[in-house]
Length: 265
Image (cartoon, rainbow, N blue to C red; front, side, top):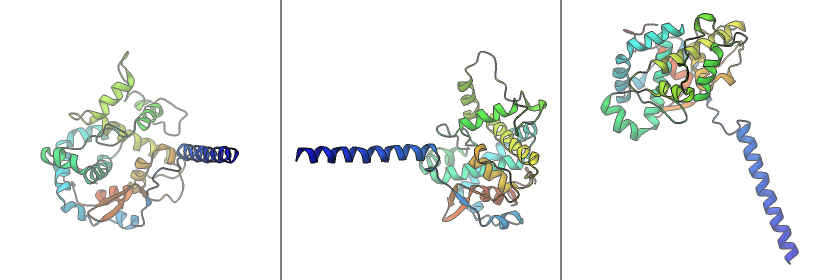
């Protein structure tokens, strides 16, 4: 009897070990990540006159007011990074709408009463929701002439930090500064400029494809693989019962008439 019990215990531990190892492998291979969606509505978003039912929401009114206060700093970051300011705004709005409709308590207690943009400081940082590893790669790409993301000597020192500073702390402070969003916008603009450069070098320019650029902003450098038929998609964002993809929602704004008075197409 004891022999059988001992065998059973060994088998149970073997099964547990297999499950744990398999789980670890799945995490390392990215199999547990949310895949998002491919946006089948993409063509509608790219034809202009896009329907924007979410522009009637209270959340959009908060965003409209907050973004108008940041007009000058967004345009400065866009000029410094070499991208169209409305492209930065399209991704800003998408990140903020996702935050507003998922972090409801924070929205009700802080973002709505103060009419401010929602900063992030955990897994993603700042009002643009960029991950630390993405920010590090943006910095590295600026200084690496052999990288397909390299933008040229004129861009190399845009993100330089003072000597003797603690770099991780300085990076975090820059990107999560709630009083000055310039660095958040600059990192985002440089990311998109680097993606544009990669695809242009590969012979598949996407500078005019907002849905695809925004999808790539959402899914990261590691998933940027230039090809002739890129698709819009990314994380699912549900707004009052309608599900958008990250790239589709960004294009939805870009092709709308919202904020055209200060951020024309």
